[in-house]
Length: 325
Image 1 (cartoon, helix red, strand yellow):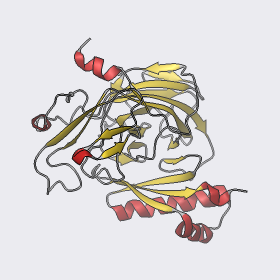
Image 2 (cartoon, one colour):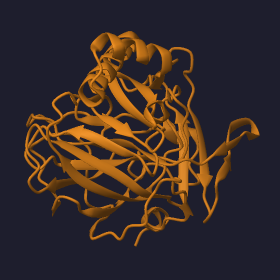
Image 3 (spheres, rainbow, N blue to C red):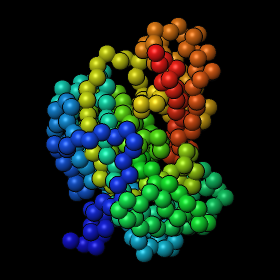
Image 4 (cartoon, rainbow, N blue to C red):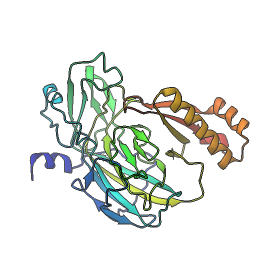
């Protein structure tokens, strides 16, 4: 086994979210079962029933182009073609077009190595940062913080940067932007304990996951998080009769959230707002004016990411205590 595989296949730092459940995986996928495009033409590597619990190992975003001893000079030779290796796709039996696939993230463990970088020509301020930058990290079991740039103490809150079902096309789509099928959402709220809802666009859903991040701020402005390999345990469930769910949505025990992508922050924010109104009308039997006003009074817009061109992602969160008895 190569040195790289030894580094990536051993998860060390367990960082399960407070809402994660204790579950036993029934199905397993590994780092050699990956792809890096979104397409209905990519055959599944696993078939599971509704309600299955799956354990997957994911690669870091560069697909082995960086090592713990890599330097900023190595950024200049980064090849974007193999980035975002995604573990999957997983075919969920009985999932049909028009259904919703609920993916509950139960456990997320960080691998032994991670990195963050500035890649010239990429990032929210790409025109201002033209020199490469790279910092690598090593993780130990039980570690909850890491030392970042300037000696900053950064909390480790791992999540998958890319999750999604297959789009209804045989074209091989880039994983870089988020789309209706999910994809590169880069939303740091998607930690263990979160259930994410995806509209099923092809039979079997064909779910994939990867590009995991050990830590990231809202926006991911330089273009990278702390990119790291991970072990992830998730559960899939089919939900029907939710026609209002057009783009991914998610929830925790504390809030319900919708997402909206667009080529500008304004477009994405408007879509997210409309999707929250749709949710409140459908699930809370509110009129649209009532939903609009409630969203203004109590919901929060968040910029999830600004760098995954051509799309940006905005989310809106609504606290669940608003409807507590």
